[in-house]
Image (cartoon, rainbow, N blue to C red; front, side, top):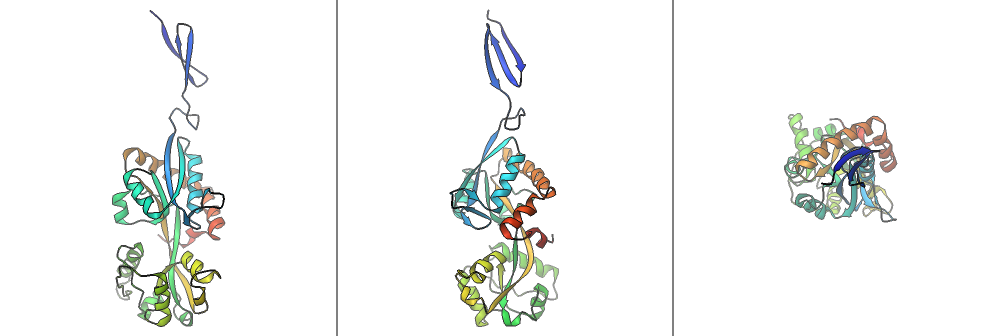
Length: 285
């Protein structure tokens, strides 16, 4: 009978069979004993500066770079990135085509039913109000807008922004903001409606206002001398994770890594690099 003997030498599991040595490396990416798991990470390909494909054809953006920093800390995981459309990202996450998706996504109860959402945010989206410049002296924040009785451009109930206004109204029952619902409209309509006086404010993301109105090449830069914007708060953004047992372990590992990246200043550094400021300073809860 041939004698078989397993021994460990230099991190290699060695099988000795009749004088022949057969080895299998035990170490993973970290040098540990757990195999490296590859996660397919999808991101929107043109949501600058959150997630995009750069001129070199590489996955880039604030959230992508944070996930790359997470990957460096999680030695038993390897991320493979795919730039794609918003629709494909969401459908792919539900089907399991992708393990992780990042798109500047806010937390909603509906998303939490479909996907795993970790406890720790990857970033933040700064939300505020676009108003007419000639009212900037009297309307300076959300409270003054609410007290003015101004009309807000309608928001779709499916839009996470709708929930933000609802939450504000619950906390301020004496001065709620009138919240009309709408299924859809274009951004051009919103800006035009405010200018015409049909509505008094548009609940607008800072990045969107800067890109569309403030930038000289923006689609609505012609309104720059008549419109202005002020902040309300930062809304945390999260990666969305395909719901299965193994990815629950990843979500927990991600949370630990993000805490470390916050503590060592990586999140702030990347935010300033991609947004020009620390967006987390706008987050109040």
